[in-house]
Image (tube, rainbow, N blue to C red):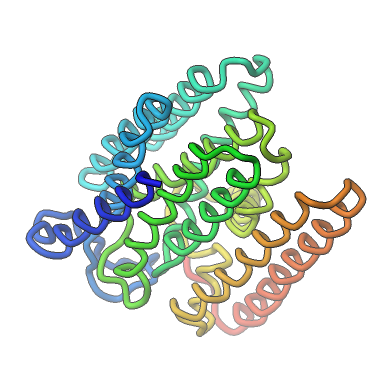
Length: 324
């Protein structure tokens, strides 16, 4: 497959430039009261991942033209956001526009209500990936596992083009992870997390639309991200907080603050993600009853892990108030 190889080479070349001559030109992520890092770190390292993905799309042109256009548009807007910031309403609106454009152009055979629901979920995937990019190695490692699982599922379905694309995203993310694992030398930034979130939703939607895997598959593969981001958001909304503002209340952020540190937290999340990915792939071979049993067991384990973090966090906050 030329796509994954091109993605790896392009990502490596861009990352080497970003860590070398380009470092001084990147925006810096300076620590504040809501940060988990202690020293300034350059962000927008996701340019390397985007370069890898676009190189793979060019290798499979024009079948990936729509996807490439959406990734490029989101990356350009997010790079501007990394530098100067962008009003929340405008940012969400542009994310929604990219999701609608992809569904309308790449998945035109879907019924209109299903198109609307799919576009909403892709837009949510964009934002939850952005929310979950706040600890060294977390988002990059989850991308390696998640898109690697997509690649396996597409290969099992006999779709070489989509398998190659998913594997290309995996390769680009793996290159970036080498510099982002703790202690991180560079962060993804919105220019990386936003396109990755889009790709997680878009490739999942494409796989469902083509009948390659059931509708539950993408949600199980990325369950740790979906569960953490969705639960945390709903809690903040119910408490009347400004949910759109940065905070340190996600489960992975709590683990870091409770003494696990970036490295141990990332490894624990990788284990959780890998378990869900394995369950998702195994369930594809099972009858409906077997799928329900296996996925029910996996869901119960995930909820139990989240409940354990909640209990320990509550004990901790009885001694000291939580950070804002």
